[in-house]
Each structure stands twice: as C-alpha cells, then as structure tokens.
Length: 148
Image (cartoon, rainbow, N blue to C red; front, side, top):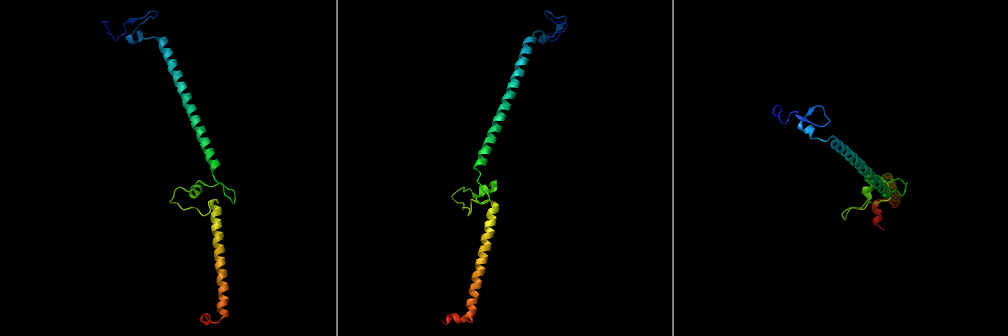
C-alpha cells in the first residue's frame, strides 16, 4: 500500500491471479449479477405495467367515445347523425340561451326547411297581393273605397 496507495491495485483475492483495486476486491460479482437481474426484471415489470395502463386508458377512451356516439341524436327527416357543431347548437346549455326552432333536424334539413318556409311565405305574400290588386281596380280609383 505504501507503493501504490489505497486506490492502487494492491489487493489479491482468493482465486485471482492478479491484484485488484479496493473497489474491485471487495465487490461480489454474484450479488452484482443478481442485482442486475433484479433491476432488469423490475424494469420489465414496470414496462408491462405501463403498457397495461395505456391499454386500459385506450379501452376506456374507446368505450367513452362509443357511449357518446350512441347518445348522438339523428335527424328526424333524413336519419343522418348530427355533427358535433349541430349537436352543440341544438343542445340547451343555460337559461339565457334561445331554443333552436327545429332541434330534431340536421343542419342540411334545417336549411332546406328554412328555404321552403321562405318560398312558401313569399308565394303566400305574392298571392295576397294579386288578390288585393283586382279589388282595387274593380272599384275604380283608390278613393272609391272611402265612398261606401
């Protein structure tokens, strides 16, 4: 030890043909191998557990998505499923929100119903105007209505 110091290769172990440093000499290779195996097994178990947790989370997310799709409303007219945007629109959220006039129709059918209603009302107004015009002409001038 005087020649190499405590950090030098001065220790001769039984069954070895060369001198070793202190840390190598007091080590236990069997225990170190067993510790390495235990660390590897622990790492493998942790990876398996993490994979199991990920699978469970994926299954839960899939189940939640399936339940959500089962609750998704369908159009009363064409039978198509509502889009997320349309679903949010027709779903009443609070007291201050206005109710959708046709909550059972999808967006396309709702627009079609609006267009049909507009065409019907314009045709009805046009018909009323056409009926009013002959009455005015039949009586003469417009002042003739006040003479009766």
